[in-house]
Image (cartoon, rainbow, N blue to C red; front, side, top):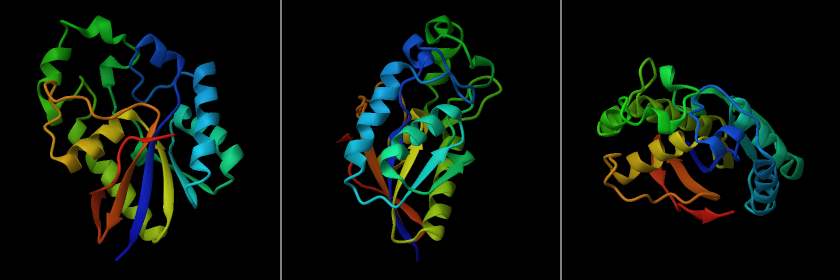
Length: 197
């Protein structure tokens, strides 16, 4: 069976991230701090023996991967399955504006959290899992950089840790880090998380 190791890295910071505005499947451009962040991450990633980049097909992830790849010089594949959670009617809204308008009720649903006309966290996990398993079939034995989104990384890591994805659980994922996942015999296995870049 196929085995591959994936370093999950969140896209660099955007203007909407700074504003705490929900992006979902929409995009805002990387801010200057984000561009510097992607360049800096590439230096650490260059020493990890990576053979390929998989990137979400959303612009903020593609741009991050492109900046990193100036240094890494790896073949790159875009993967729709690594997109951020679809936030439906909440796309483009400020998180602060949603408090008291259904956000708390959705957050309390854990894996069933689903913005109006969006997708659930469980669905995000399912498509991301399928994407990585399929990638492992194509590139067995390789170490692959997966440039994706916070929602995707949380879904993968939290499911593998058996978390309920509820607000009382302590935050464990640190920014500016890689989180390793292995596909082994058709299943995901969690490796090291919070590996500083």
